[in-house]
Amino acid sequence: MIAVPVTRKIIHVDMDAFYASVEQRDDPSLRGRPVAVGSATGRGVVAAASYEARRFGVRSAMPSVTALRRCPDLVFVPHRFDVYRAVSQQIRAIFLDYTPLVEPLSLDEAYLDVTENLRGIPSATETAAEIRARILAATGLTASAGISYNKFLAKLASDQNKPNGQCVITPGAGAAFVEKLEVGRFHGVGPKTAEKMNRLGIFTGADLRTHEIAFLQAHFGKAGAWYHAIARGEDERRVNPDQPRKSSGSETTYNEDRTTPEQVEQGVLAMADDVWAWCAKSGGRGRTVTVKCRYADFRTVTRSRTRASPVSDRETLHETAIALVRTLFPLRAGIRLIGVTLSTFDSGEEDAAQLDLLAP
Image 1 (cartoon, helix red, strand yellow):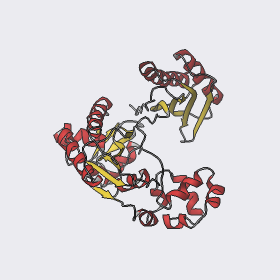
Image 2: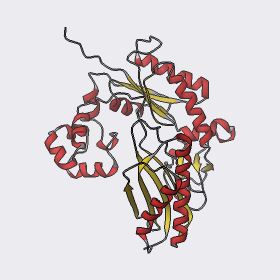
Image 3: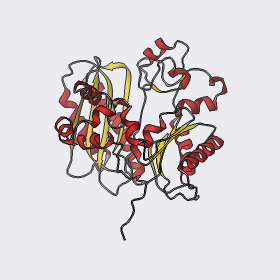
Image 4: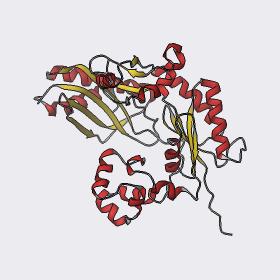
């Protein structure tokens, strides 16, 4: 007997302006006002913006001074990652009531495979609506959802009716849905890749679909096969509840440039300590150490070294990171940002977590 392929039912749940919404929930005086999570002083950046702030063009990763120019009434609040993580755990517990196949992407979004959901709900659309209602009841926060037959389309769909909405892309509509979108909207196509595609005359999914896989591989390497597939609404990736994160990193932007080697090394050691604190707690170990520095003129450089065996102690992480940053001496300019990342985690080790330290 020939097995009939099962059409999967995938939901991508994405919380609406998560960090900012948590702050507005916990402080009623912030509701209805433009809010940014982050620091307004010095070289602070916006970690998250409420929808009221987004109407003024305020976006995450934007320098705070730029955000304030766009929205003079913007209210900055400091981040509270312990609270965001606790809320995220509440939300994930709800997901697990419906399926064990939950793949978190971050604190505020995840894929769920509900092809065979634990509650026996036949419709993925109904399942998504019920999950969103439970999240609202449990946390006071809204979520948006995308429902489709693969991960790529589900993620695209979750953006369609934000905030507090959901969108379904059926198997018969996937290719047509992709055709209408600009390539910059596609997951896996960053700004630089989108620019390169535009230079090649590829602006929409329809344009992308006209090119054979050999052409795309010639211009985009291994990613060419992925672009060829998604242009046709195809994505065979499974929802993987055990998907390991790829790195543990920490970085910070300083109010004043680090202008001496001693200051830069102190910054590197501080970031390495943050990384090792997670390693010590989780047991995670990686083999690749990367140091990132951004100069005052915004030029960013990285230096990496992959060891034969995982970094086993803080002193080794310190030594490797310092050796890497010393390749930048003498400094060509002041340093405004310093980061350290540990990656290449061996299979079977604990998931890594991305520590996102904002400017003071």
